[in-house]
Length: 259
Image (cartoon, rainbow, N blue to C red; front, side):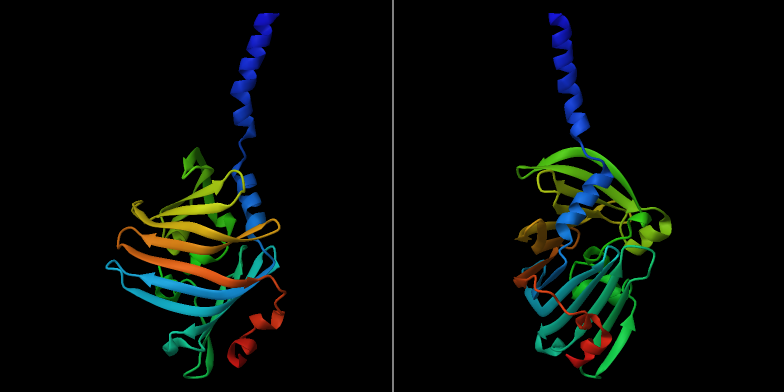
């Protein structure tokens, strides 16, 4: 009897950690719940830091609203530097088969122009190390996932997930051979991503350094993206954050040109 009890205890020790591990689907679903704040706005600052330490700064008023489980709208009205003041970017992004849309308003010509989200500026957001695809929701149906061994970084116990495009066309469109993402086991927040180039060499490291926390939501308010190959770095900070409801008219081309 005693031997049976010891055996049962040993099996419990061996089995419990495995059964407690979450699936990829659970991890992504729980992360999505923490990230999907219905409405948020604030002052959006991008610092572009060169290898030798030179810093360029861009500032905008930023608005984001979740329209549905499959659609997220964003609006940026730039205030600094003076040469881009009044320029606006409107983005409608989708996490299904629909094509992402972006419009830009150029005050010098007073014209709204629809442009390709993926090809604009080589795909990089305002000359930063963030691509547009880094900042919008991905269509998970276009991706493959593999759960790697859990890893502790800076005292945080993480689930680790590898993702990549399900075919060569999608891989080329994303511009990454694969991505490694780290999800905090305690909060479900994704706080780090390692991006590998098409030769599967480390290209960029993304880290979240601060959050705006409101109820169940953890929205990143300070993010860094470091290109380890060029040693260029971009820092995005969101300040004066508010979850006040944003009118739907903000996310129209008419508002883009009238604002």
